[in-house]
Length: 252
Image 1 (spheres, helix red, strand yellow):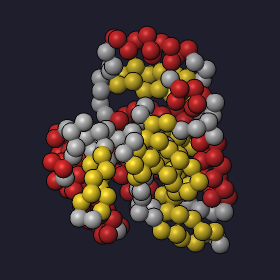
Image 2: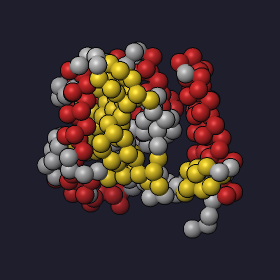
Image 3: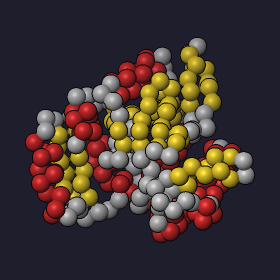
């Protein structure tokens, strides 16, 4: 509820509920009473992409330029949306073809999650860019997302954000990072372990979910490879390590 109160201070909020049991009715009724919050009750759970696309549809119908997507297990401060949109607008004003912008600091309970980034020059401005960002806490260009057909619902639960970023990059849009903002995002059961001299984040996803992650990454691999072989192999390696390192997780 606190996350929704923070978001309400920044603008209209849409909550998409994917077929929660009736025990959630009182909570969702309370949410609907909060200022600027629209609640959509989906009768069936068809994956996160549908929920994200419902947000995109609402943003487009309202004439908004930017869409902030946030998971229920993330937290951010009251100025987060304002700072992200202001930074996005400043880039667009210089002619940057911005498709999405993510938080520069993503903190899980187990530690920091870092993006492989690089600095590029555009119109005399240094911009920190990356290939993909997690959808939670990301501000998306409504126009750019519309141009790629929104989020890909055929992927189910995982790699939705990766596919969106891939689509944006294929259309010439930039995926940027705002180095000055921080997002707290709880990744399911994540732990930082030491493997071959490096810190590696291992999630607590079920075997079925892990298999889906690898499957979706393999599906995206040919398109990723065509754009960036380095990133394509990096994402496959990360997914494989997450599966193979499972026995090294500490019991909690």
